[in-house]
Amino acid sequence: MYDIVIVGAGPAGLTAAIYARRAGKSVLLLDKGAFGGQITFSPKVENYPGFESISGTELADHMVEQVLSQGADVEVENAVQVEQNAEGFSVVTEEGGRYDCRSVILACGARHRHLGLENEEKFIGEGISFCAVCDGAFYKNKTVALIGGGNSALQEAILLSETSEKVYVIQNLDFLTGEKRLEEILRSRGNVEIITGTVVSAIADGDEFHAITLKDAKTGEERELPVAGMFVAIGLVPENGAFADLAKLDEAGYFDSGENCLTGTAGVFVAGDCRKKGVRQVTTATADGATAAIAACRYLDSL
Image (cartoon, rainbow, N blue to C red; front, side, top):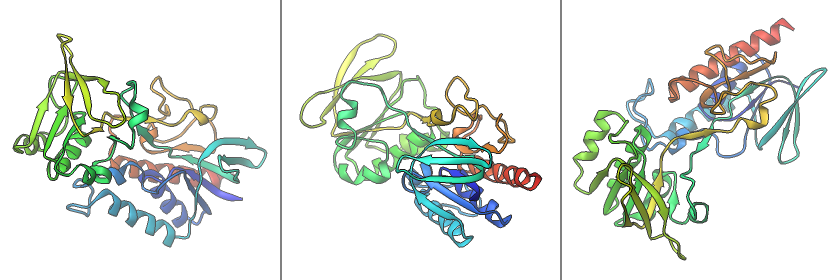
């Protein structure tokens, strides 16, 4: 039996594992995919203390190495249920694993939000991407669209502008919401066109992805825009539903927990982007991981 099972291996889960192991607790870290979470999709991280500039993948690798050096166990499995029992909890995975523990930290993260259009699922991975650093090279010297106007979207667009022939940045609002510095960089690029007050209303059908339909948010006027690919960066959706019986969710599906990372269930804690919060950055995720781990250790020591 583990002292703590951590569900999710993004910056919050990785930090929690480091703190828990340093406190002498036995730890199992579970994640359904590549460790590192959403930060691995960031081509550049320039706001994390200690690194003037580092790729998200490199930063995640440093965290994973530290977790492993501290002696935490890791498994690539998808946790789908947490059961309470007389001795604590059992974390059940889609792959058939069942891991007993005395406490749980839910650091489930969030997935990319989709546009919800017909044909969208059909073209994901075949014309539609959520990661410029992963797939941008496939569109070298081609025309692409980037949907979104926040920091992540602007960073993606800057990266795409370095290799693509043309980049259209499509924002539903009348202004970009990302940092002014990033906007200035984009506007200085001759191959970038920013289109605000516009939404994507349709994806052209066919054997290959080749065009999208743009709709003016005010007038409703539509026009077709030929593009070889589309990158979507319109936010994240939490993946907390499987654990709603242990930790209350807010109206948006995030864990309704404050800065103390506590839940209504003794022995269950939450951390990172899956938690209701005003700021979602790698630094706030790691802060949550530390807070949740310390709270879990205090809980265990009180038993």
